[in-house]
Amino acid sequence: MTASTNMPSFATHYYLGSRCPFLNLSDLSEAELVRVLSELNRQGASGSSKRIFGRRYMELRRLTETKLRRLFIEVGGQPERHAPHYLILGQSEWFKGLSPDTRELRIPLSQLPTHVTSATYPDSFTAMAYGPQFSLPYEPKPYHEKAFRLEELPALVQEYGLPSDVDEHGYDGYSQRPFEKYIEIQVWSDAPLRSFLEGR
Image 1 (cartoon, one colour):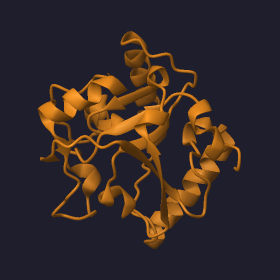
Image 2: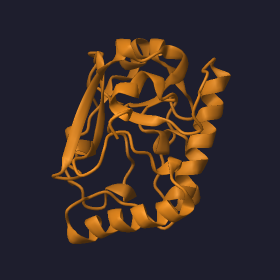
Image 3: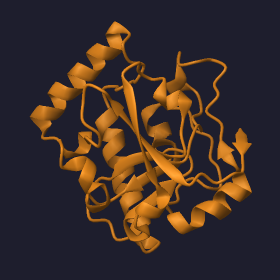
């Protein structure tokens, strides 16, 4: 499962080249959400994207973000947003390959304030453990259902290594297999990302 215990010094935000970075589905009104999800699913149907947004995607996402926010507060976090901006620790070729239109921004971890930055091992959808309620595969791990502080990441990576995003099955049916491909970084404030947000 793990490929390396070398701790990356940066996080990567992946986004579609046809859109601005750090656009967040959780920030949209219900009307906007219906429109955007419909467009994203059309891209999937046409083969231009491999992302999957099922009928209950937003229900799972909201449960996940609510639980993650609570856990982050319990370990001393001070979130300013109701839902975070998402990045990946280091990089993930698997995630980048979800769409040929994928772009990326790399941000040094040193630029992310620890009081508004959390992490999950692996991504938060898996780590928050709601998968079984949505008929998704889930294998409990000791690092699940936890929000980690940035300063905890070196020890976490040293103990468990970095997840490997190599998938011998490719993208076909990925949502129906246990998912442990990267460590996710969540930024619960607009302030550290202001320079990227202002141009939207």
